[in-house]
Every structure is written in C-alpha cells, then in structure tokens.
Length: 383
Image (cartoon, rainbow, N blue to C red; front, side, top):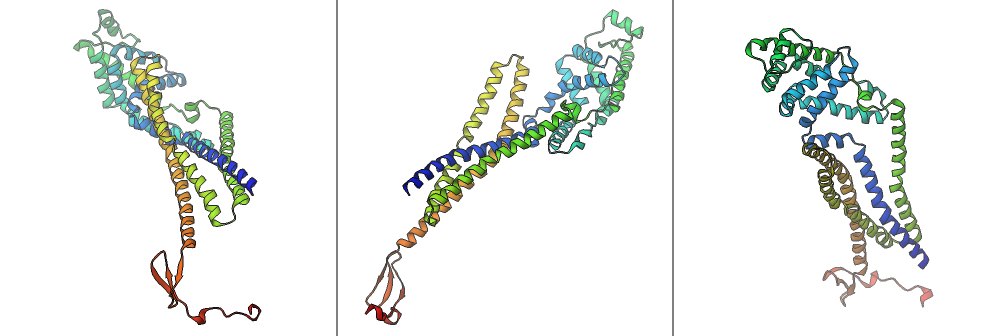
C-alpha cells in the first residue's frame, strides 16, 4: 500500500507538470493557426494607413511584370522622388484606401487558413482592384494630380522644353499656368494607363503567398501531425490520473483528495505564466526599437507590427488557458468541498435523552425520537 502511494505521488507530480504544458501548447497552436490572430493584430495598431505607401510600389511592380505596358514602376518612382514622402503617403492613401487594403489582406489571410483546412478552391479567388482603378480614373485621381503638381519642384527650362516637345518620358514638376494643362494631361494618361492594367490584373492566393501546391500540402500534413501530437498533452495526464485512481482510490474521500488537489495545482500552474508573458511582449518591443538597423520610422513600424501581432496572439492564447485554468481550479475545489461536507456529516454526534429523543450535538436540535418498540429484539442466539 505504501508503494502504491509513492508511485501515485510520482504520477501526480508528472500530471502537475505535463497538464499545464499541454494546455499551453494547445492554446499556442490555436493562436498561431487562427486567422483572427493576424487580422486583429493589424487592426488593433491601425497599421493599414502605414502599409499603403509600401503596398502601392509592390502592386505596381507586380502589374508591370504581368502587363505589356512598360515603365509603370519607373514612372511611379519618379513621382515619389519628386513629391516627397509626406505627400506620397497622403496621395497613396487617397488612391488606395486603407479600408480596401484591409478587406483584401483579410480575405487573403482567410483564404490561406481555409486552404490549410483542405479547401483548394480558395486559392483561385482573386483580389478586386475595381475600387482603385475607379479612383485613378475619377475625381480622386484628378485631386491627386493637383497635389503632385503642387508638391513637385518648379519646372526647369529644360523640362519645359521637353514638355513642349511632348517627350515620352514622364515629367514631374510644377509648371507655369500656361503649361499646366499639358502636364495634367500627361499625368492623367499615366493614371488611366495604370487603371487599365489593374482592370486586367489577376492575382490570387498563391501569387500573394508564394507557396506552391506541393508546399501547401506539406504544411497541411505537418499541422495535422502536430495537432495529433499536441493531443498527447491531454491524453497522457488523464491516463496518469486514471492510474492513480486504480492504485490508491478506495472511496470518494480518497478520490477527492488524490484528484481534487492536483487539479487545483494544474489550474494554478496554467494561469501562472500569463502576466509574465504580457510583460515579455513589452520587452520584445523595446528590443526591436533598440536593435533594428533601419531608420526611426521603420523601427517604429516594426515595433507596432510586432506589438499588434503579439498582443493579438496573447489574447487568442490567454482566453482558452484562462478558461481551462479556472475550470480545473473550480472542479478541484468542488471535489474537496464535497469531501469536507461528507466528512463533516460522518463526524456529526448524536445523543439520546432519557425521554427517548435524539439530540444533534452539531445543530443543538432534537431531530427525532425512539421508543422501546423501535429497538431491535434480541434473537434466541443472543440469549
């Protein structure tokens, strides 16, 4: 019996260690493979307005490769260099709304995780550029052209001469009034040209992710195998608890003692790292700001991106961990409480008064009575 108790104690120790690790691993896996983690991470830091100025050159470069219209990216870089980063950010945000970008990015994220679940048809869905092309052709595009001309440096004599000669090279400068119409026409034609390319532009999930079908199948199989491995984090502790019950439990009191207390410890250890993880996120952001080699704006953007994703991942991780941790504690406390109530009931003392009344010492009340007729008669064998 003593050996059984020693073995059971060792098994309980293993349960208290393995069970929280299993809870953390399953919760971390759920956070990492949840589309909401990445979507919420980008939204909570309001990153889409900052992503737009970076996305536009990438979009133009991709369109340049797919179309037979040359020099789109060259002309775009010419505009960006001439007007400066502040005006560039304002113009690109007007032409490519952050709300549109958010819709496309979230759609791509959803499609990625849908494919991981086995739906290959999601890869054929394409991004919708109709809103951007409409803005390029419409009033927003004309307002952007006015901003470009106002922010550009004054035209030199050589640039004016090239403008009068209708040079095919895109000129970005602030012309005098008599030459403004010609430059506006040239920029409008460039905007329409880019809009026409976007109308025929097709990019789907595979283009955005760069993952081939074979690679996606490998990722999917790896995730499935990892999920099956994580299930051991629950199955092993449950099996060990069953073995403890077999070795030591002979009554409900024993069951409550050997199972209730370990469940409470599992819940406490599962909840214990949560505040430290949140503090670690702040340390990670600080290290990004101090160690990155980029300029201050790039480092701030990287820190905001990391903060958004980590906090979103922490929320996705902490929710199931908190629920399970508190559930284990509550179940363990219930078992111990029921055991205590049963023991208290078993320890309740009674007294019999001379009048035959049954008196409860615990409550101080008469709970019944007994008469000689209620007493068992001795049998012949007792005489």
